[in-house]
Amino acid sequence: MHVNKVHHVTAITRVAEKLGEDEDWLRDVANEMEIEDGVIWVYGVGEDGVLAFTDFGIENLIELVRLYRKNPGLLRR
Image (cartoon, rainbow, N blue to C red; front, top):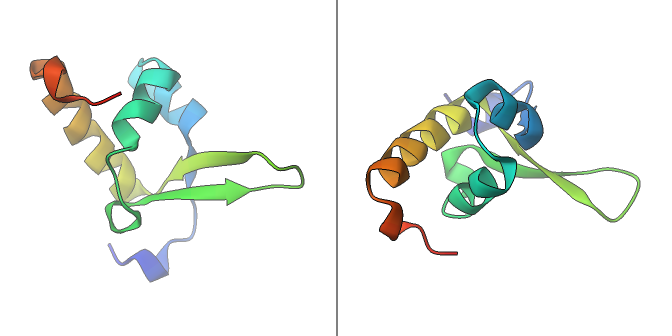
């Protein structure tokens, strides 16, 4: 999937719900990701942003979740 052809993203809250994972823990995992991995920040009216993922980003996040579940010591907080 090409990053420049993304037509939607999914907020981390929804991804966490779908995966049955803790949102804060997923945020720590996603901190390892780069924009090329399919993660972006979405800004609204206020100063707060929302972490969001492309479909490709969700796939990458799932792989990282598997990795960190098998090797919890790898995750840097």
